[in-house]
Length: 389
Ligand SMILES: *Cc1c(COP(=O)(O)O)cnc(C)c1O
Image 1 (cartoon, rainbow, N blue to C red):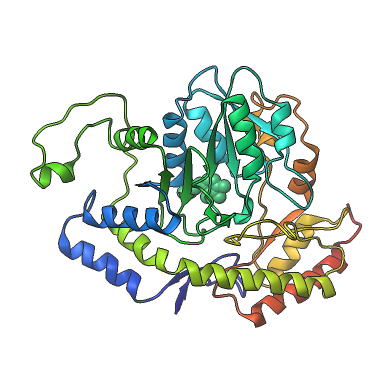
Image 2 (cartoon, rainbow, N blue to C red):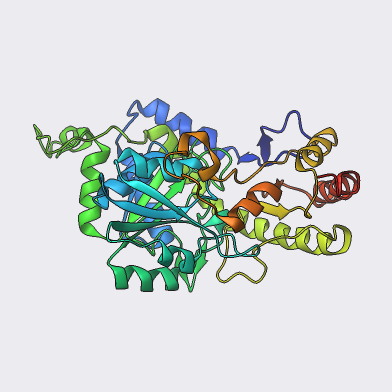
């Protein structure tokens, strides 16, 4: 399998994997000359819906646009509050703000479970709370049974940011299909890619109709329907957007989706190997999500450095060894652009993770030799960086 994107690193953080099928699929769309809103996108949506057992799936230009549509389908607007984690990518919170609603940050469960704490969420519910936005960190499930109970009791909608979670499940049910809506990302560093791209899924017919219309300018009929002679004109029923995916990217997505089962299995095996090697050779480093319920897509390999480790120096040394690392995530409530939404807010567990987390390389093409280089380098870097503040 051809691997791209690894030029300057001995071990990159993530890697796109294409076989000959991906370029062939894109080329065949180019040759067809039907480039957007067509049969390929419809097939991709049907296949994705079947894959995660969702009633409706909508391909969108990226997951951020998908999250915006999910917020609109939930009817969010000014005055509404949505409770969400701060330990996530900023797009999760931005999508809420696009509608004029207010993001309300809550802490994660523990240093082992980095998903939103149901207990902390409950403490932040007010008469204005309309929804809970969950993010399945690294593909590991949020506590869906507890959130469903809260949602029913307080009449809230659940939106799932499932950007990390293509193929993750809990109690035999795919993540992204538990809530009112779920959003997946196909950005190049995710478990499958369409370059830019995303998918919104829902089992709710009314939400589906809303998403269908808002994704395409608020129009009642689509170019594709008119092309097939199903309609000659259209009405515009509300202020919509152009959040559509094109046929080239849908073609890429159809091929990439077929690689998910084997790719996620390999990620799972590598995660276990990391845990075993680290238990022997990286005492002091903690890996979260030990014994976590469900089956994770294992999107990330997050690690918690020992207290007092100089993380910047650790990451700098890893870079010198040719190993790319990252931070997931600088907490949103610490950003200057979120000062107004997070005034003097303290989230103790999130802040510890935000300060000590390092993400190690993980992707299906990672070899055991490369994994051992990562462990060797981390052991040396850790030695050099311990107790330096
Ligand atoms: C990648 C990501 C997004 C945004 O996805 P795009 O497709 O790049 O818009 C949103 N939330 C999380 C948690 C992500 O990791």
